[in-house]
Amino acid sequence: MIPVILSGGSGTRLWPLSRGQYPKQFLPLVSGQTMIQETLLRLNGLSGLQAPIAVCNEDHRFMMAEQLWEIGSKPASIILEPMGKNTAPAVAMAALSAKSEDDILLILPADHVIADTIAFHEAIAKAELLAQQDLLVTFGIVATAPETGYGYIKASSSQVGEGFKVEAFVEKPDAVTAQRYLESGDYFWNSGMFAFKAGVFLRELETFNPQMLKVCREALAAAKIDLDFTRLDKEIFAACPADSIDYAVMEKSDKVAVIPLDAGWNDVGSWSALWDVTGKDQAGNAIKGDVLTIDTTNSYVHSSNKLVAVIGVKDLVVVETDDAVMVASKERVQDVKGIVDQLKALKRDEAHVHRKVYRPWGHYDVVDIGDRHHTKRIVVKPGAKLSVQKHHHRAEHWVVVKGTAWVNKNGEEILVTENESIYIPVGVVHSLQNPGVIPLEMVEVQSGSYLGEDDIVRYQDNYGRV
Image (cartoon, rainbow, N blue to C red; front, side, top):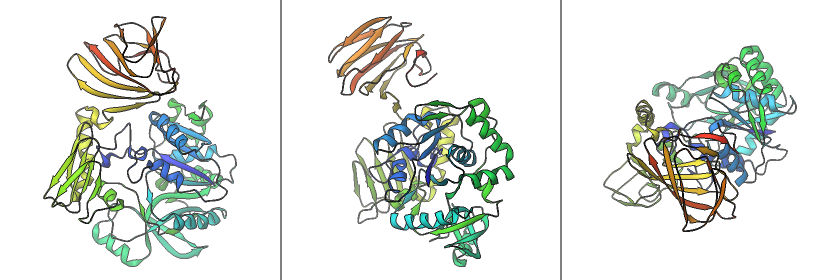
């Protein structure tokens, strides 16, 4: 089997931790590992697995590569989507990338929690047997409550192997309908996880959405290979129809079977869902970071940087990051997406990025902002190099705090060590590299009439950025 990791979600309901440029699947929300890392690590112990295929947004490529590297996972390919087109095209790209049409793909969204790994492995083994019979297999979560936030799968009475043929996929129900589904025992929550042969899926997609398959083939044929990255052709892929795998194939095919899965699954789609899967104190509080509580019950409190004190409340979600604080009733956490929509409408950066911004060479943290100055803390990885660039509107003053900087300033090579500084005037072509074996830490003070991140003219870049 080939694990296929789908990492296209934006996780807006977990704002302010999850942002457009740093969504929830790249965060360590439940354990010390990120959700992407957990997705792969929970497969340990399964035999016969091939190297994984990851599909992600082009903007997230370096985070994906680094997080896979951290756990020793060497991907067969990291397919980069220039824009989101939902899950069906993403799965089609993975299927087209398989070496053989008989390879079985194990489709796994990168942002799920599964508590019982043994039960999960047993379900995968059952699904693999059905996939070998040319069935499209989905994993149906054994429902434990009348959830209205999930789609459902209705199993037929026709048993196939240790699963059932699927009678219908149904949309998110109202509370009364969800209770009826739960009581019937015929309905499962739709997990969004699948197993099938690459060729079987592609033939079904060609039957039900030939245009999507045609565009996917063309975008992949025109893709550029860059190390582990497969960069889909942007202009071609833009013409691809956007649709979920459910709508495009699963709901229309007569080859679909469901394997029941009872393994402590949670899609962590909201703060209340994260509270459900997080360890709690005696008062039912899930606490992360530097937090003090008095007379507080059944709440989720997360501190990223500052001391957070909570007194005399219950059933609240309180989340502090370096640039935002969010307080919500646990019953209203689905409305967090509305705050993100407001931020986008106001064109505020907090919708997309954190104060700490990750780059392929390291990261920077904006610590002070004025009308004509920005101050940043910059960390450059050993051996990494920023692009050769210039700025039309700002000058930069760099102070090295730790490590060594190799600076090219208008063609002059300058070594800048700890407690030394260098000034880069407006319009001067420059680059910066860390030649050492420890991280380079600097303070940068920008000054000028315009300090936006788009005031960059790049002449050369090691990471393929424009």
